[in-house]
Length: 168
Image (cartoon, rainbow, N blue to C red; front, side, top):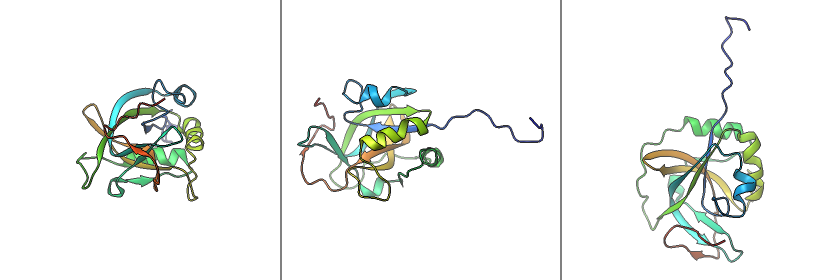
């Protein structure tokens, strides 16, 4: 290595994903899709959680809380997340609940995010079942940015008033 060249440290991109349904520990998609998680911890976001007739949940989040839209480039999304500095976790105006889930930290977004995007039916710039967006979350006493999957147009579903999806 040339001493005048900048060091290329072996740093890995960190991507934080908020999960609130079948990707949580103990549910049927966790082991398959979150096996490589570096860290799992309880977290909350603002939104409205629904149980859909198909047997899985959907989350609606306030438009005003969306910090970024997901893309087809996991590394760019991790970089975007790393640049956003969250200052507050105030309740947004309207009828929103604290939604409880888990903050999953991945160190290899190129490996870990595309399979989850496929599971959630997320296709950037196309019609998708879920959209991946970035919002603020609270994990313990830390406020951070997280990616999550939201459903834009909920036509059916039973609202989960306590913000904790438990059906399996």
